[in-house]
Length: 198
Image (cartoon, rainbow, N blue to C red; front, side, top):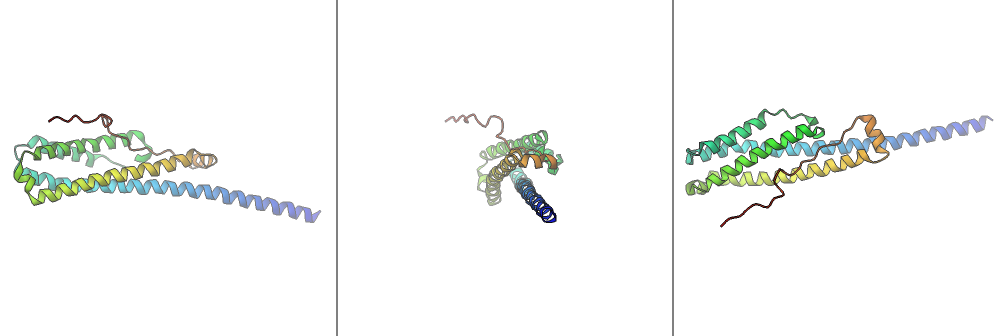
């Protein structure tokens, strides 16, 4: 009887170890996915910060050539200021309302920058200015980076959201208190084709 008890105890210990390793694998996969989202979010913030850093130089360069375009310049500065005042914590990716507010403010800045670049078309001397051309190129590159990093963030969020919804990892995610991450969405009106007039 002593030998049977040892075998049963050995089997139970083996099962407990297997279940522990299985749960640990799921837990580690969830942690890795969560960190992937955090890393992607940090990159999104990084490229948005790059854009924020370029704006004062761009506004100052344009101001020297287009001083009477004050309203447009103020729109850019105001949009930038609103973004700067938004307190973005790490939980923004799990809070749809805060993410929406963040996206709206970034969209306002994009719109203000677009208006500024349209104004620039009226000033051939400004368009030929090397400082302006360099800033415009950097801004265009940054806008492309923003698009890429937002796409990567959405991909990382999708992977994470899929993991926390799939069984059995959904059980462990529930115990860990993990919530779905919010995606970047297209701006309002993005589906409509722009009207081109000649």
